[in-house]
Image (spheres, rainbow, N blue to C red):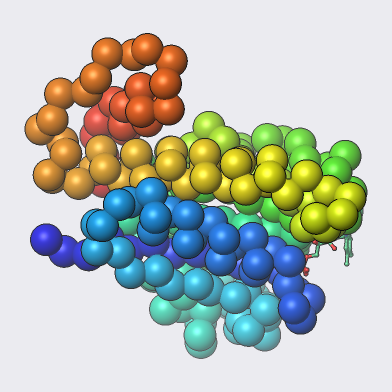
Length: 214
Ligand SMILES: Cc1cc2nc3c(=O)[nH]c(=O)nc-3n(C[C@H](O)[C@H](O)[C@H](O)COP(=O)(O)O)c2cc1C
């Protein structure tokens, strides 16, 4: 069977980047949730494409190193999209990149949205900024978005367990969507909904099947 491709876009700018750290955790959890399925993960750090993204904006299409990065995202089986919060929204670099994506190319692609911020009060960025963007691109955004504030990384003051649980939950939902589009599981009948995590995953998988998969 062809390996699944999971592409993760990191718009973090710092070195080291907390957004990149979150992306790595999400990718790792997604691979684990796929439970043995062969998967190729590609991480795209937008910081490295900043100059080409500027040139692409001026040109009106992806140029230089931005072009293969956009193609990778458009052809991915699933996407993890993560941005730092800048002035209450996604960063300009993040939006510049996704403005280059063809509006029809990502229909029904499963997407996990994530963000990092200095303040825990800005977690709603996921739902007021990222979710509408990926809905516009006709992707299927998993119900659980993952937001990590600075304090979530600090074992002494933050709730690292809650963050870890949220990462696993979101990754499980992304894996469920990938399972729904994979031929091997598309023919299996889903279990009854009984409120468990597996029933939740089956519900999400059914939703993806209704959308027609990718
Ligand atoms: C220009 C700028 C604006 C920011 N605005 C916000 C904000 O509105 N809310 C917030 O919680 N954090 C804000 N931050 C903090 C960053 O979101 C936070 O440090 C982020 O985790 C950095 O990600 P990185 O380490 O991957 O670069 C801002 C940082 C910068 C540089």
